[in-house]
Length: 161
Image 1 (cartoon, helix red, strand yellow):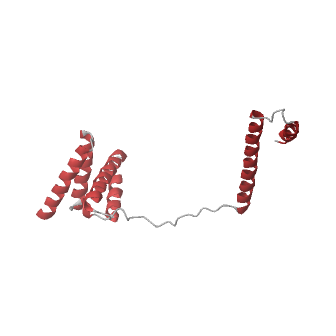
Image 2 (spheres, rainbow, N blue to C red):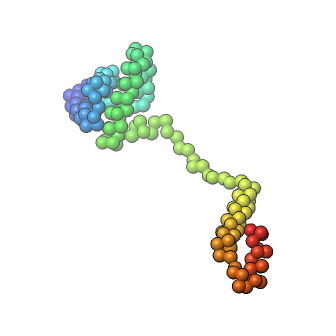
């Protein structure tokens, strides 16, 4: 890397380390994530924020062959942290658009038969609810025996509920 690119990397690297520390990452995590970024820089001899998704894929393919899965996993987490931070700070959207395809919104379709059954069920439930309320009202406030006609009419209505 030339001196200008090295300065750029050093600046980004320092910000990366600072962000790791601010987020409360442990010392070993910070070391592992920093090592992953340095390893990526050394492999491509350029600043990691300029890499394309194809380059990262080829790098991971080589990394899987030469290192353990735990190293690959930790490096992946380190890259994710670095690129998420970089995208947030510098609007790098190279990786954001990679492999993303549009998906149309789905429409909610309700079967008309089900809708009719649901409507009739709700109607019956509401009728039953009304009758229970009416029965409770008639039980709590029965017509008095002062007016026998009303009382007998009430007694005839009551079994219907």
